[in-house]
Amino acid sequence: MLIKAPRTWELPERLATPESVYLNRRELAKGIAAGSIIAGAAASMPFGSAQADDEVIEQVNAQAAGDPTLDLYPAPVNAAYADAGRPVTDEVENSTYNNFYEFGSHKQIWQRAEDLQRRPWAVTFDGMVEEEMTVDIDTLIRAMALEERVYRHRCVEAWSMVIPWTGFPLKALVDYARPLGSAKYVVFQTFDDPDMAPGQSQSWYPWPYTEGVTMAEAENDLGFIVTGTYGKPMANQFGAPLRLHLPWKYGFKSIKSIVRVTLTDEKPMTFWEELVPSEYGFWANVNPEVSHPRWSQATERVLGTNDRIPTELYNGYAEQVAGLYEGMEDERLYL
Ligand code: MTE
Image (cartoon, rainbow, N blue to C red; front, side, top):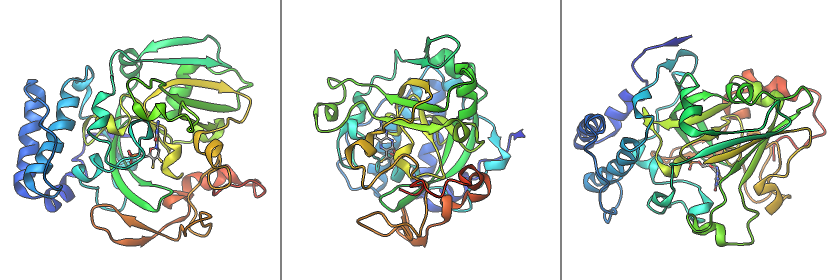
């Protein structure tokens, strides 16, 4: 059931953030509504200082301010996912530590990702669908009932965050595509534009970034298509204007900046599996007992606090998803 409730991340944020930054965010939120925010200069100070943090928040708010769907935010909180059991990660931390190889193979791509042209944007639905179509992103987003969900996010690199996402169930996207009964997989692709995203000039990567799930996974209630973070349209570095989040799987499954959704009966080859099949597979379900070939997955570093905590099977979402994998013991479910 959808309810209007105070967002659970507001309290931890207030406690965890210097007051100047917190107050500034409130002002910025008002500024967004008034359309008066402009992007700040590149942060030259280390994050954690009030000035550098403000510059990051100005950047993400400026992008939100320019988004044609701003009026849809904040969306009602889905009560079933209002609390991820851990404090929400500070927005500055989250906005400046990202994997988005199209803009570089390091974590600090938040400024480079400013080059991502988030409009015009269209999403093509093809393959085993009743009718192939290409839909303008704003038409697509406005066809959905947006809601907010707070999810844990666990990267295969053994760090984790907690994020208040806004978006809609993955199942709603699949329904929108009107798949044929014969479709078994949903495949997603990111844009392919080396002029915009210099990482795509690196020819050893199998661009465009591709990911996929089974129909059963796509229909599980946890699967989420993300349009926003922290109560507003998401900044480019998160994978604007449309990304996936599958909280029970390693983060690389959660493809960013989607332009194509293909329904098929063939298991897809995915970006990381094609690159290093011995280290990354199709399923990539979180499991503390199955190590990555080069490191343990038993614990994870919580970004923001640097606490090291035990990792949970399916990232703590076993109750909702373990049933999807019954009888599949022969598959490499955790790689
Ligand atoms: N999607 C695209 N298109 N390109 C990428 O490089 N990186 C993946 C995933 N989706 C990636 C992507 C990886 S490895 C992770 S851990 C998450 O995005 C990171 O999401 P975040 O930056 O929002 O934490």
